Image (cartoon, rainbow, N blue to C red; front, top):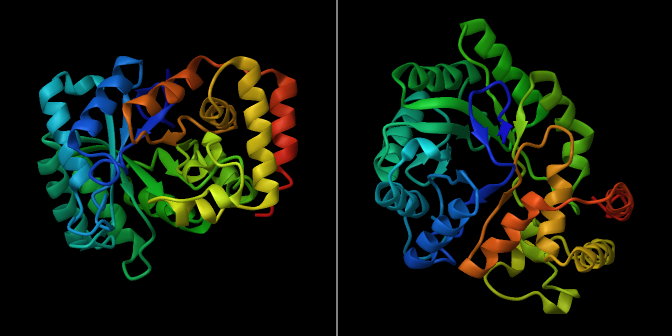
Length: 314
């Protein structure tokens, strides 16, 4: 188990992303995925109040609603670490204090729980003074509605500002950071935010850990990219990125696992990373996620992945 920053949250070093729930995974698929993930040793689930408002006919909150149904059906709430986010829901945009409070209460209702373990500010809000946002999160902590604070899509400068405001107010600092980070998108985190995470002892949960599916190995060239996620996958598609995919495939074949497992294990081994976030659209996609937990990469394999991924234009 891994500790998230300075918090009391213990998690397996893998987080199940809930962005597919209510989008590419229907209710029954989503519930089955959650059962399989936790049945295989996972205990950390990540969602957001905005998932999946981008789908025609959805309003946002669909993922939280499914997770809430599952938590109720499963019981043993305290066995699961639940993370969700505020700032991008169509009805609750930004980090203004009143908005944060209303959004948190709406999330609690959908999740059918009395507390959120890790509540992220989903993005920066330049329209709201950071001191006001910090105070609103602190008030939710004081009420017991959220246990810990995280920051997602924040620059190093914005993280500094949040921590400074928290210290000035004498309220808890954030414990977690959620950046875009994977084998084909490294420099944004490694050349900036990693030092910030180390400075404040933030546990890092990288999103798009599998580069929207590119690192699963299912795509051999740009011509293979199609489907609901094609635009998201396509942005990674360069010859250098496909060289990384090939290296991941070769190592996965040696270990008898899927490329997914190798890509996630490399990420989990990086400094400050606590638990990469990866989603599973179907039940069959859960096992490769879980197999990353027990996979041991040799130092030579890690070095080879470091080398080939360093050549990706970022």
